[in-house]
Length: 207
Image 1 (tube, one colour):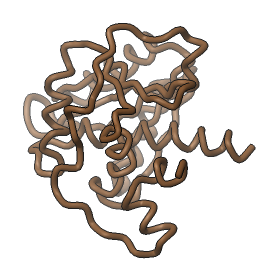
Image 2 (cartoon, rainbow, N blue to C red):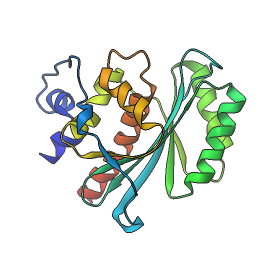
Image 3 (cartoon, rainbow, N blue to C red):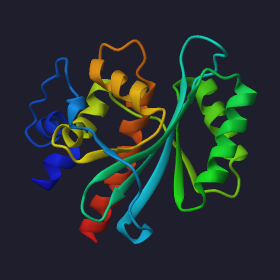
């Protein structure tokens, strides 16, 4: 049961049942998001990740988005913060650095690497920019819908809380219409953060 919750209904069907079924619309039951006014004590936070989905368009087009997520000792998940904007490359890297300074060393940073040499160079540039912090890059596989499925399972059973903040409304609305929303950066970054925290939980469980 834990494995199915971690992998998601479609991930579990594909990897365990060898019978993947593409999901339809309405993946996220956004009414099941819980709003949390304050974070629990640090000893209840088992791990924290800030995952960046980067874009390089200033003032239009795609958004750069960094989602900070934690997993708690009781198995619940908290989206603590979302940084999102249409920034130039220089401004974006400055904001990513400033955000890492505020998040502190306990927060692992992950950067999504876009395909091609340009994506690799961009990810490497961010890693250099974050010298002194725990930062990693990855080139995700599979489409955004499949990657979002494990996270959607946890949302839909009421296991995900949002720390109250001005970003909540847009975050919820994007999830409400995913995968048909105009922008998918917040879902994509959330899926990335979730997957990294799940990997840590599975490794700890195996150990």
